[in-house]
Image (cartoon, rainbow, N blue to C red; front, side):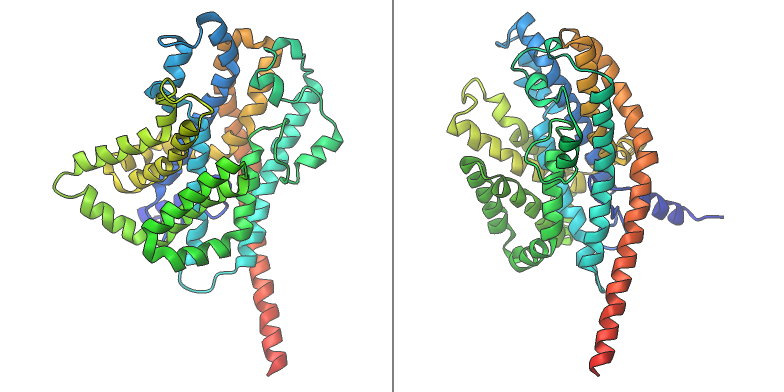
Length: 413
């Protein structure tokens, strides 16, 4: 009979972070199943974010956007947590920085070349499949621009026509923007981070002792990036924060035991959760005081980076949050989170062009469940095989590189 421990190990091996083919393994990354659940929650938030972008023009036309309107309730109150898609992507970046870096910190030999080879397969195969699906939607379900509000997100960011030239230009993941499948812009930075991972890990180890200074410096660099409109500065430091957490993971766990499981665990845990969520969406809550586009709002928006880091700490250290994220349904969404992230925008866009954004409620009621079902199928048909292929490629490349090194060593003896 298979032991419970063996079953748990097999389940952990099947978990795969967003854009990461490594999963939750034994060693430094053990007991981080809550992060899979957190990834699932973040993916759902991104879906709701894009549904709100689709519905926004009609909601504002019918009810305005002032205090008390439906749009105000959804965007400038704590309900914004449900649709904070941009902030959820920052959380994805912090998560990737942590989970992707962990295997490189394990004792023993680690093949960076093997890792990168598998990582490329793990990213590109699902991305290519998602682009193929999105392109087929555009080809076979014609899009009439008159069905959507002029100047809206749907009108300006979604392709109404496409061809092979655009298909091949987007499969490289080197473009700044993607109108066939919008979410791919973030995968570009996942790829860049993967290539630079050894540098990130080395730097995090060097400065890990001074983690507070390193964290503040990463936030400042990201802030400079958003002020100067340099995306590399804006996003790569967010990955570094996760990498820093990976280097300091045992200290983080010890801190959570002392602080969050101390004399006042509920109070401390609640303070961390509420404070982190407040930082995450504070710039939305204060729009009436600090308007969008102002320097003050930009700086407030950058606090989302620190809020994302705090949410990750809460997932690891606050027992009630960890248990909620480890529940079966949340873990299932974590399992399909990458697939859901990749397939939901083409579905929303296609249905919007069919029904029109004036029928936003119909589009949302169909798109949400359909995206989940399609994501489940995409996970089984595309993502899971890509995970197996990535592991095979990683092992083969690592073994061949090691064999080549052994041959060179013998030839020089």
